[in-house]
Every structure is written in C-alpha cells, then in structure tokens.
Image 1 (cartoon, rainbow, N blue to C red):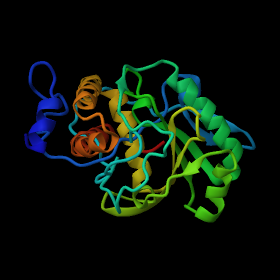
Image 2: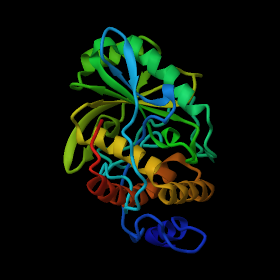
Image 3: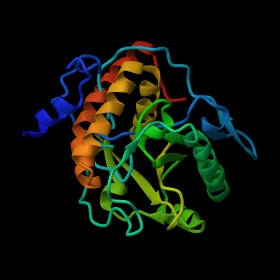
Length: 280
C-alpha cells in the first residue's frame, strides 16, 4: 500500500472523512510539538525575577482550521514533537530507551510530571533559560500520546559549550544526531539541542530552541491548536493509536507520521491566522 494511502486510511474518523479542516491527508511532512496544560503547574514557565513563575497559555477559542506539523518540514524526532530531517539517524534512541511505540490514553499526571522536570531544568539552566514549555502530545489534555514528556527550553541563542555541560551536570544526555542539532522550520534552518533523560529516569525529551526561532513557534502552535480544536484533537489521537499498532518501530512510526503532521500544521496555521494567535 502506498504511503499516502496508508496516511489517508489512518487519519480519518469513523465516518471516513478527515476532520482536520477538510484537508486531504495524502500530502504532508512534519514534526509534533507541545506545551502546557490549563492547570497551574502545566503552564509554560517564564523567569520574571530571581524565581521562576508560571504564566498561563494564551486563551484559544475553538476553531476548525486545517493541518499539523508546521514546523514545516520537521522530520522524525526522538519523541512526539516533528520537521524535515537534516542529516541521518544513527544512535537514536539510547540503549536504555524503548524502541517500540505505544500510544496510550491521556494521563492526568502528565502536567505535574512536566512541572517537576521544569523545576529541575530551571535549577540547572538558570538565567540562560527564557521560558520552559510543556510541548508535544502530552501537553494537550485529552490527547492520546506516547508516555514521553516533551519539554521545550527557550534560550536566547544556542551555545553548545555552555548549555551541554549544564544539562549533563544533572544527568541529561545530549542526543548526538545531526537532525537533533538542526531542523528546518518555515524554510529556515534552526539550531537546537535535544537531551535524553538520565539512564533509568522518567522518559522525556528536552528540546533547547532559540526563543525567536520559527521551530519554537511551531511547537507552541501545535500544542495550542490541538488544545483548542476538539475534532482535530480526537482525529489526531485516533490516527496515532492506529499507526502505533501498524508501525510500532520508533523510526518507522516517525517517518510515516511526519507527512500527516504537516497536514495538521497547515490547518493550525489557518487557525492561527483566523484567531490572531501568536507566541505568548
């Protein structure tokens, strides 16, 4: 079965039609992002003084736009969030990490687990961090997801010589693949760093991105759109659950999901334009 047919068959609701803004799901290519829940500790975290303070995500009225992984060409990632791959996959995941994809129903403890990670990361990153966001599917209440918390640390600029030692100092492991160092978003090459958790720790991915980067915006838009649009959220969750059963290998799953994510992000962009959404 052709890849586009696989995507079309998976990304449909029970009626056989796609609720993602009516876009044909046969065209795609992207990355999944995420961020905070509506509860106190699941918000993005922003440093406003000597202490980190949570700020609530923007209010997003329900809308019915049309696409997902606008990180425009965000390809396979090590977790839930995605863009066109730059470079090749070599050592992902680490030996202690699960290589089989299991998508589970939304778990209410995910926001609290994000908040614990955010506090740990604030302590390590200090003034280098502008904000810390819960991103990816676990940041969207009601959305089925892999049980892996995605965290986005916004920094003013990527500085490997300073940032890698800080996170390695608390046990996080920098993912070495080229595609975990550079991603293409909105037609622009964006530098980034991605960290795996300490061996044996709670499954997560920590993404360091520049605060003004288009890839940072992409991840936040992914989250906010799916939080606002219930039909899109339901369809995206069902698609991922069915895809995980058909393609449980991590790399196969990510490569197949990438085009569908791009479709989802196209809808998200239309929603953003209609609602006047911007990065908070």
